[in-house]
Length: 153
Image (tube, rainbow, N blue to C red; front, side):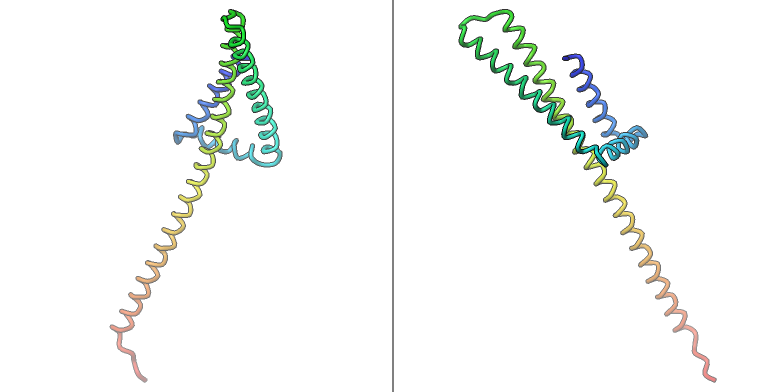
């Protein structure tokens, strides 16, 4: 189980690194995350997250029960010490994995928001440039009208 959790944490770290740097892989990851947040994706994510959270709480309960046994016995049993280390490693890996999932979700949200704001900023700049060009063109038209005398018939 610990090998699976280590692989999960390493994969999540790689995903975070791919989101942090602007590469072609980043656009692919963002597209996959967008697809996973549509349809039944959120329901599946909440179900898996809930299951992992229950597993995390179960592991923490196991850690506390072994610790309680150690304090009641008064001496350190080697088997209990190994169980405690194993459960503690499991709990810390699962907790870190849950934390990394939250980081990935927030990074995805902020990247999408940043892209939306950049597009909006470009549209505002384009509208401002169009307004300035029309204003200059109108001023030029008025200047040419003033310079040319009107012909009276």
